[in-house]
Structures are given as structure tokens and as C-alpha cells.
Image (cartoon, rainbow, N blue to C red):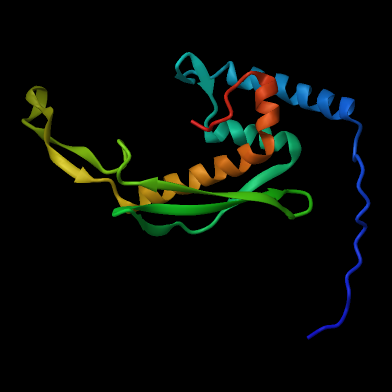
Length: 173
């Protein structure tokens, strides 16, 4: 066991004055608005626009952040199976972990239990797609969604204030 002591500067103070921080955030918010306004299919719920994971990644780029997701794990909560994932918020320049988040994708959610199964029936011009039943959503899709949600949440935890300045809701869609 090492007896070395690490000494850190624990002085409390501002890195930048608030007016500069806000001016930078307003610049980022304007840039975000410019990008989001060009979306062909924005996510609108109750007349409010929400950001998707890719939008959160755009804001993150303004600040030199990215996320790193780990392997998703199988979980069961109150008898419901699903996936749980963790994501770390990373400073691209230093590699430091600045935060993180966990998120789930569970089989009791509307789109994540079963999906309609179709088959093509008939031939040529008479061919049509026919519903033949339901099939479970594959595990890898639940795992991937849990990772996406964790990544969006990690970004949201650090960057929500900028998104609010841009006029958007902070809950990832």
C-alpha cells in the first residue's frame, strides 16, 4: 500500500465570469436552433419539441464532450425483463469522466415487448404483406435502446441548461 499523498488545489472560484459563460451558451443555443430547425421529422409531443440522441450529441460537440456506453445487462424489475445500460460523459480533450447516467429499456413499454410479424403472400402484382402474428422484440434492440437512453441522459445531465436557452424541452425523446 502506498503512503503517497496527492495534494490538490481545492480553491473555490469561477473558471469564467457568468456573462462569458452565458454568452458562450447563447452562441451554442443559436447554433443548436439552426441545426434542429432543419430536421425533417422533429419529435413533437403536446406542442413541445424534444431532442433526440443525435441532437444531444450535437450540443456535446460544442463543448468537446462525448459519451461512452458500456455493455447492456439483462435485468428483471417487478417481474418485467429488460435491459439496463450505463454511459459516461467524457471530456474529449482530457479523457476525464465528467458524469454519467443509467437507463433502462423494459418489455412492459409499448414498443419494446412484441412487434407485428409480417410475411409476403402471393406473387407478382398480387404480392402483399400480410400480418401473421406477433414476435418478441430482439434482445439486442432492447440493449441498444438502453445504451442510447443512457447516453442521451448523460448528455442531458450536463447540457440541459443550454438546451433550455435554445427553447427546447430537456427530456430526451
